[in-house]
Every structure is written in C-alpha cells, then in structure tokens.
Length: 78
Image (cartoon, rainbow, N blue to C red):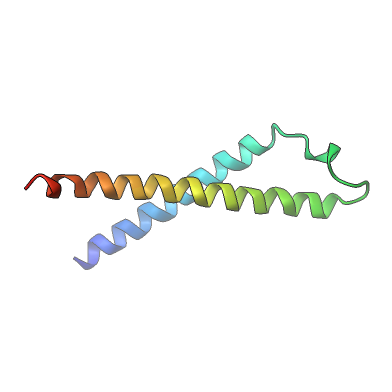
C-alpha cells in the first residue's frame, strides 16, 4: 500500500512537469510583449511563469483526477 502512494506521487510529479512544459511552450505563441509596458521584461517573464503554473496546474489536476476516476469506475458496477 505504501509503494502505491509512492508510485502515485511519482506519476503526479511527472504529469505536472510534463504539462507545465507543454503549457510554457504553448504560451510562447502569445505575444504578451505587446500588452506589457515598456521596460518591464522581468515582470513579463514572471507573468509567463505564473500563467504556466496556473494553467498547467489546472490541466494536470484535471488529467490526474480523470485518471483516478477511471480507476474507480469498475467499483461502481460491482
């Protein structure tokens, strides 16, 4: 039982990192520099990171929840 918690933690961490990478890559398609004030490069980069974490967390949490729900679904039919 303890090893299943460890496996679940490892899978969760890997899914989060993978989704964060995809989210950061996808956000590169947006030209936020046109929306930002001039000479605010550091703040713009921080905004990219915060958007990546916010969007990535929501998406990865959905994917992990969906996976756990699909694992629990057979118990519904017993």
